[in-house]
Length: 496
Image (cartoon, rainbow, N blue to C red; front, side, top):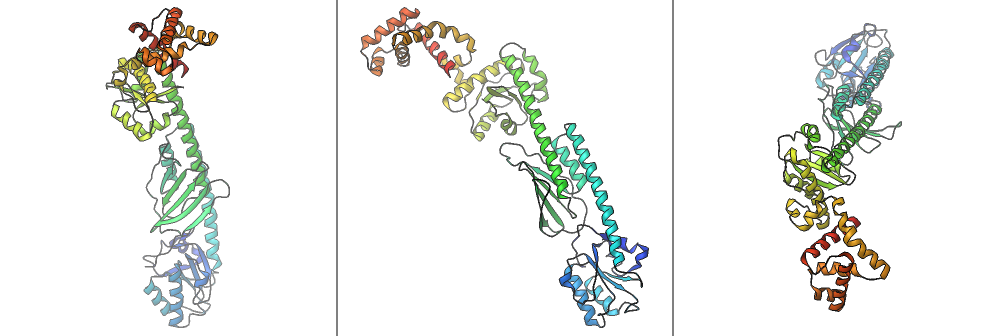
């Protein structure tokens, strides 16, 4: 059986035959041709009209050139080669009945053969096709309007992106896929729907949209399967795949724009939700709210009843972390992003994959999540200092202990032990702070300090005595030197 391309629009042969005023009768192909689609009627008396055919036309003739078997064979072969919908022979002008040779050739090549009653013009077929086309376009426009209305309603109801894609695919037929332009930083919401039933594939072509910034491309991907791709204004890709006829490019552009709006609204909603959770984290961390305030959020994330690991990451990394750490609770604050997981390994793996520094605390239960928040914040500061992931083991040092202290708790060290030295250096041009810092870094060695600062040991000793006189703490004593080390650390953190 001949296989013909399905036109963008047409009527099945059986529907044309059913139009009584056309006076059509299927002579060859009554069993297998009724579903063939006719796009237009092309009248000709040529026996080889191939240069004038593009496929799916019904080739109409009165048979003035069909006077022998050879001429009948040439016509049938031409119709078969171009994938036309069949041959329609008008009876009464030249032939009183269909030539047997024509019937024989049509049967041999499986080309439909239709008889048309005397007195009916071939243009009557085109009138029927044109009326059907207008009705189809009007109905298609109405269906498109109804679909857009449904999608806008879904948009107002904050429907998931996947649901909007599914509704669109069901309406246009075929499968729809929405691909984000930069999948490295965002999830790719996509949905597929079963392909709609149709006939064979359309020819390869490109159809740029003239009314938007989107572009559509149509291509054949497999036998009887067509793909239409729309590049949206934001550079995302909406791809339709199914059987012809393909959906209108402008409708796909509208669907793509609605999907982009839905994606942006979802991103805004997720950001607001993470910021709200971040405010709760800050309150719990500062002791202004009980950890129970986080119970609804943890429950929604499915984290209740599990051992939790709180990690801290650089600010504004929440969307990226949401992609790489699904099923977690993410909290956004102005200076840090927190993630609650059930596995420290997942945190370390994500940091390695993303090339980010982060810190995480010891596993805690829900009741002690404020401890986990504090440890995560402290380990992030250490991670930034060391340039790598920091865990709870990094907190078992003086620096780790200090990182867990609220800034307010360390202010007295700065005010009482550092500020008097800064003021003295500013007024007198002395270098007490530099000498003190070097002395502490040298683990209390006078000789090492003198060599580092190119001073005599007695000069170092004199400056340390001056420090003792100003602040009442002797750097030569271990306890006082530790206090001064804490004060210097607190001052440096404040400067950072």
